[in-house]
Figure 1 (cartoon, helix red, strand yellow):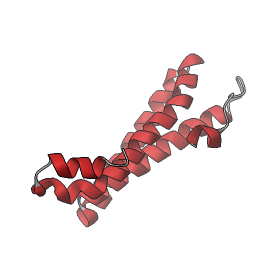
Figure 2 (cartoon, rainbow, N blue to C red):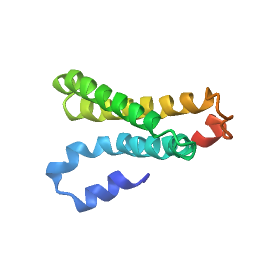
Figure 3 (cartoon, rainbow, N blue to C red):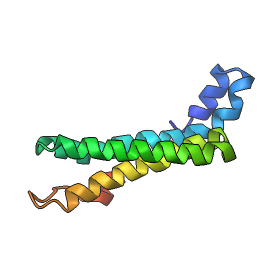
Length: 115
Protein backbone atom coordinates (compact mmCIF):
# COMPACT_ATOMS: atom_id res chain seq x y z
CA UNK A 1 0.00 0.00 0.00
CA UNK A 2 2.96 2.31 0.49
CA UNK A 3 3.63 2.20 -3.24
CA UNK A 4 0.03 2.40 -4.39
CA UNK A 5 0.43 5.96 -5.70
CA UNK A 6 3.37 4.94 -7.85
CA UNK A 7 1.58 1.84 -9.09
CA UNK A 8 -1.47 3.92 -9.95
CA UNK A 9 0.78 6.31 -11.89
CA UNK A 10 2.06 3.42 -13.98
CA UNK A 11 -1.37 1.98 -14.73
CA UNK A 12 -3.57 5.10 -14.89
CA UNK A 13 -3.72 7.80 -17.53
CA UNK A 14 -2.50 11.28 -16.67
CA UNK A 15 -6.08 12.51 -16.36
CA UNK A 16 -6.40 10.45 -13.16
CA UNK A 17 -3.16 11.63 -11.55
CA UNK A 18 -4.91 14.50 -9.77
CA UNK A 19 -6.53 11.92 -7.51
CA UNK A 20 -3.29 10.22 -6.50
CA UNK A 21 -2.89 12.27 -3.28
CA UNK A 22 -6.18 10.75 -2.11
CA UNK A 23 -4.80 7.21 -2.05
CA UNK A 24 -3.00 7.45 1.33
CA UNK A 25 -6.13 8.86 2.94
CA UNK A 26 -8.22 6.06 1.47
CA UNK A 27 -5.69 3.57 2.83
CA UNK A 28 -6.35 5.07 6.28
CA UNK A 29 -10.09 4.60 5.68
CA UNK A 30 -9.49 0.93 4.91
CA UNK A 31 -7.34 0.64 8.03
CA UNK A 32 -10.14 2.16 10.12
CA UNK A 33 -12.48 -0.46 8.69
CA UNK A 34 -10.03 -3.17 9.72
CA UNK A 35 -9.64 -1.70 13.21
CA UNK A 36 -13.33 -1.29 13.99
CA UNK A 37 -14.02 -4.90 13.00
CA UNK A 38 -12.47 -6.06 16.28
CA UNK A 39 -15.09 -4.22 18.33
CA UNK A 40 -17.92 -4.96 15.90
CA UNK A 41 -17.20 -8.69 15.90
CA UNK A 42 -17.20 -8.63 19.70
CA UNK A 43 -20.58 -6.89 19.64
CA UNK A 44 -21.92 -9.53 17.24
CA UNK A 45 -20.45 -12.28 19.42
CA UNK A 46 -22.34 -10.86 22.38
CA UNK A 47 -25.55 -10.76 20.31
CA UNK A 48 -25.84 -6.98 20.10
CA UNK A 49 -26.40 -6.29 16.37
CA UNK A 50 -28.56 -3.23 17.12
CA UNK A 51 -25.50 -1.43 18.47
CA UNK A 52 -23.68 -2.13 15.21
CA UNK A 53 -26.63 -0.84 13.21
CA UNK A 54 -26.95 2.33 15.28
CA UNK A 55 -23.24 3.07 14.92
CA UNK A 56 -23.38 2.54 11.18
CA UNK A 57 -26.38 4.83 10.80
CA UNK A 58 -24.71 7.55 12.89
CA UNK A 59 -21.53 7.32 10.82
CA UNK A 60 -23.55 7.38 7.59
CA UNK A 61 -25.49 10.47 8.61
CA UNK A 62 -22.26 12.14 9.73
CA UNK A 63 -20.70 11.31 6.35
CA UNK A 64 -23.64 12.88 4.50
CA UNK A 65 -23.46 16.03 6.62
CA UNK A 66 -19.70 16.33 6.26
CA UNK A 67 -19.92 15.72 2.50
CA UNK A 68 -22.51 18.45 2.11
CA UNK A 69 -20.24 20.88 3.95
CA UNK A 70 -16.81 19.83 2.71
CA UNK A 71 -17.33 18.96 -0.97
CA UNK A 72 -18.41 22.48 -2.04
CA UNK A 73 -15.26 23.91 -0.43
CA UNK A 74 -12.61 21.27 -1.21
CA UNK A 75 -14.08 19.01 -3.89
CA UNK A 76 -12.74 15.47 -3.95
CA UNK A 77 -10.39 16.26 -1.05
CA UNK A 78 -13.41 17.20 1.03
CA UNK A 79 -15.13 13.95 0.10
CA UNK A 80 -12.19 11.81 1.15
CA UNK A 81 -11.73 13.86 4.33
CA UNK A 82 -15.40 13.42 5.23
CA UNK A 83 -15.13 9.69 4.63
CA UNK A 84 -12.06 9.41 6.82
CA UNK A 85 -13.66 11.42 9.64
CA UNK A 86 -16.82 9.33 9.57
CA UNK A 87 -14.87 6.04 9.65
CA UNK A 88 -12.67 7.26 12.51
CA UNK A 89 -15.85 8.25 14.37
CA UNK A 90 -17.38 4.84 13.68
CA UNK A 91 -14.30 3.04 15.00
CA UNK A 92 -14.16 5.22 18.11
CA UNK A 93 -17.87 4.73 18.80
CA UNK A 94 -17.57 0.95 18.67
CA UNK A 95 -14.47 0.88 20.86
CA UNK A 96 -16.10 3.19 23.40
CA UNK A 97 -19.19 0.98 23.49
CA UNK A 98 -17.28 -2.25 24.12
CA UNK A 99 -14.87 -0.67 26.63
CA UNK A 100 -17.76 0.68 28.73
CA UNK A 101 -19.87 -2.41 28.40
CA UNK A 102 -21.31 -3.72 31.62
CA UNK A 103 -21.98 -7.21 30.22
CA UNK A 104 -18.40 -8.38 30.13
CA UNK A 105 -14.96 -6.78 30.03
CA UNK A 106 -13.61 -6.28 26.51
CA UNK A 107 -10.45 -8.42 26.32
CA UNK A 108 -8.35 -6.16 24.05
CA UNK A 109 -6.70 -2.84 24.73
CA UNK A 110 -7.30 -0.19 22.05
CA UNK A 111 -3.74 1.01 21.43
CA UNK A 112 -2.19 -2.44 20.76
CA UNK A 113 -4.99 -3.13 18.31
CA UNK A 114 -4.26 0.12 16.45
CA UNK A 115 -0.49 -0.36 16.36
